Length: 464
Image (cartoon, rainbow, N blue to C red):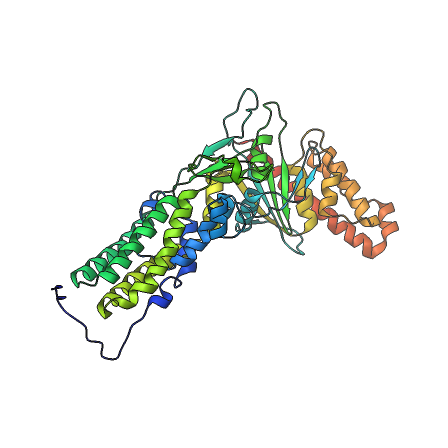
């Protein structure tokens, strides 16, 4: 005879049916929690709990697996893992190179992160005329990759060390609750709910282990050892980031990226009879991720069939494990993935607080002149860059631009000499009259403010 459970809950006419929401509840939070799994050391080993949202997780991450079988089972666009985990794919701001004057209308994900991080800085409020404040951030680039005698044939890549944080230990709570409720269901002889909680623990733990097994890396850009400095600026509305440093270090921000590298399994799929004419062999199928995603989908089907067969006590235990896991996933989903990346890119580029200066300038003209003075290398022709800031072609602006360019040619001269170039002549006062003359005078005062600030910053630039 089957053994009797040690106790029973008599529900009367009450029936608790949790199977309908078992696989869908908490899916968004669970997916958001997994998105940051590669940033933290040991997180992949802490997924052994009965996580809700198995259907959503399976359908989402099953798209990573690449083959006709997996594409049919989990339809959707094939994306690289870095883009899938939102480590790539954001469009960066406009970039203007100071030496060549070349312009990139769009940059990459790392430039986007640098700009977003820079926008968070408050900066020093510079005295002077104020219309609409513009922020100028100066970043003194550090060496990102070790220099080579000649450019390597392959891309520059280096590993990113995952962070160690105490918050990962919070996973002990949902793990303890899941194993405890599973044991209580076995003690109460409710093998239906026991098996479903155990399956949830196994599927979640295996998925976390496999999905989190990728190595996070930073990919740079090759440059010749004799390459000139790559000074330039990122422009996004009223925010300007000046990048001062070697061409390779600046290019890493412009065209570098994060990559996620999984061990291929199987290594190759070279069965020509299954490929279309001209189709390349598929490598890195991420089959292990596909199998884990399939297990998560099967988990939902099992819950739909078996949870209604369990006792009321077992169903309460099942819901309790879900609730504890959902709270933990909610906690992990509150961690901002983009914010983590912003801090991570600064750390990987070797940038500390002493390498970054932020100023809040009162007008666009002040910001334009200050940026050009800071970016002025030998042979620099700033006309094109100033026009990027202020494209106006009225007589007042043409006169102002001409005077500013003269100052830039003699910037190493005395302060009085530069100031004398920023004064209106009696002829200009007569030609422009009161209204336009007042505008030109204000613009020239903005240039004086920018010149004084640039001279102050020169000493900081010479520091290591």
